[in-house]
Image (cartoon, rainbow, N blue to C red; front, side):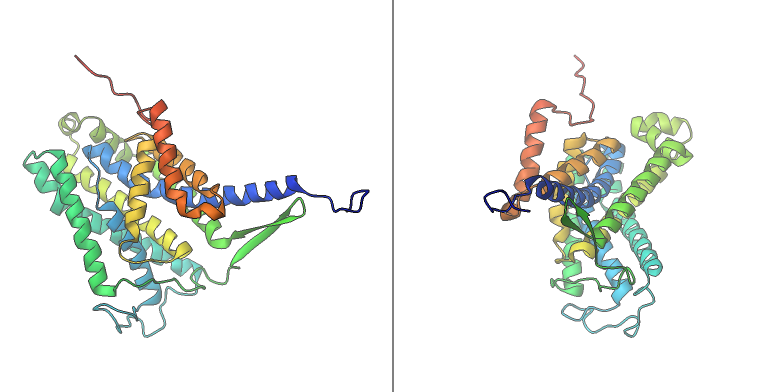
Length: 338
């Protein structure tokens, strides 16, 4: 359609709306992954009052575990170079249900590693009544050991999941808004839906089950919980397993969407996860979810020409909000007793 002078009419509203929808979908997809990952931090912090810096390494392991089950071999480098677990025909590839099973198995393995980390890095410190800072440093040391072990075994190359990991699903879906086409990658939709399901399940477990009530009791007061017959040590292990499970699942979701960029690719997400839990409020599960979505959406609206500054935007947003609410969006203000 042209104007009276023959010049074409511009359609800024439809263009802006389509770009807005595209950005929102991108932000929800990555923000939901941030939320799942940050929940692992939050669970451990709510029980022990410390940050588990090995959580980023568990995130990385989850992606590699799933890749191992789906592909079965690492061709580029490392001690596992040339080993083919399934003879080039993995039972977990090409079928979305089998890929989902591989993802759950990998997340469970990541949870098992998190339990092992608790036994090695946290329990000895707790038994000696050591300062929480020492446990934090210990977890950082374990994280360095894990990522270097990964590099020794499989190298530092980029690994991408096969295109048929989710079966014969189309690579992208498109729809029209105001005459403009909005394209959403199928993997982004899957990431968002899986994240919603996991967040809902975790909310149910924490809020409606006996395990969840016991975890909340341990988080509130371990001494009183022990007097009530709750095995504090056992539920600390459950907390670490859930934390590792969520971290491993988040690693797989990111790996399928963006590839596994190397053993240290969980480090950047580890820092982002810290920003999420601080933004949402330390120890707050709803806060971790809200913080993840806020940071994901903030990054999604960074113009493409400035995509290298996404991390700057996220941490600048964190700084601004903490100036207004030092306890975070949903955190509780600490009452100083004198």
